[in-house]
Length: 227
Image (cartoon, rainbow, N blue to C red; front, side):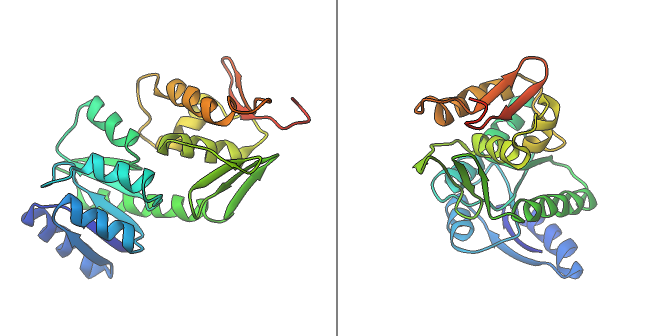
């Protein structure tokens, strides 16, 4: 793997290099948020290990800008001492793919990175996902409906990608949460909030709704033949 480590603690950096380099992985290091953003937006990495508490720009803002401003889809694993539920929710809402709390096992970190990489590669099997007049380009991160760009949040993008992969099949709430947040779904009613925001971008500007909610069952996309 080609990894970017955004971390200012020299002991943690040394441990990561000592573990991953002998396994044949290539590591780059950025010691503050601004340097991390520059490296992540300019170079291709398999995954990014990101600390939250950084000099200058913190990890949340870095991840948010990486997703929203630069449209970088590289998997991000947040590595931090912050362990409250709200901290984790904030990380996922900023665009993180996984969250590991210090102290941690290096073997678990390695396993999580490999899982993120497998998931990312599966997402790129089909470069452009299409259903009816809806398209999502996984390379650029741009979604359009009837040729018009959709303004999506990072989580809205993940939800739409999951629904597109399975369209027009129904995805249960549990299955959709697993697709979006992996093994660490939020305990709150975050999905409903994100579905509402996605519906505002996907359906409100158009005359025909595509995002269907089946109460107690799940969510799916519907085409013009069902409208």
